Length: 299
Image (cartoon, rainbow, N blue to C red; front, top):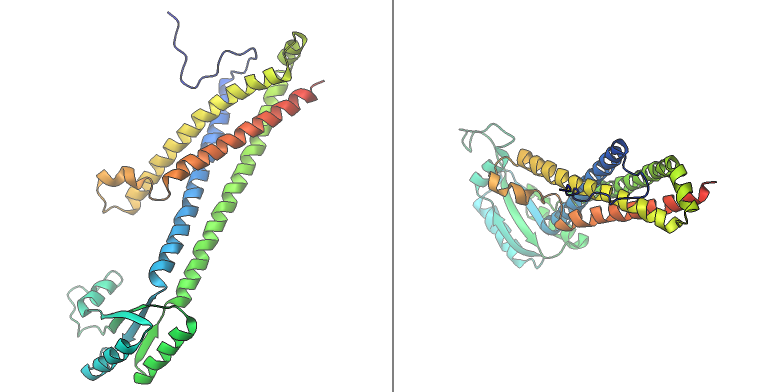
């Protein structure tokens, strides 16, 4: 009984292309490159969405801080009356003292302390209808006119810096991915050219028997793309496993039932399709061009 060939194996070829050691080296290189490019691509998408989320949620938020000892019922009424009249302010909320205490508790050991033991400011959150610089500065100036103890923060400065860093990391990730693709193409072209040179005698014999360069190209292409497909599948599986473990390590409060869905938390599903397809396309083009050039260069 004839043994069934393994999945994605190379078909029977006129060329002695099966070289387990060389195939394993090629597979390891493509697997590693696929994994790294997936992680880099996912990071690029993650930081892009993170920056977009910050901009959407924080650009129209401002904060008023007042020393608790300076805050009085009279000042509160003046502020409420003033804010109600401002078109730029869509809504506002005085944050309860307990929420302020809970917000700083992760950084300060304040368990068991009372409000009188540690001075916490009065916080008023504002939702703005406009982020126009002149209008925001006018609002800040008017608040200072009510009381010099009012500290108004629109968060625009640090938000702008945060967005710059997030976008810089995103661009750096894209540059790294492009560099890795270039390295993959260069290394693959060298490996394929060496494989052609090693099979020089067989290629010459096939030419004598009437085989065309196109036939020889198909033999190389089929074998190397089968190896590439295996490496891409293993690279995707490795990426899913590592990203899932990273998520479970960084987010230990989530139960295990969410681990599979968390594997996509650093990226979108299209990343898992687009990047392997891109690598496969680059490998196909590289093998095609390298084999044709190497075969035609043989004496």
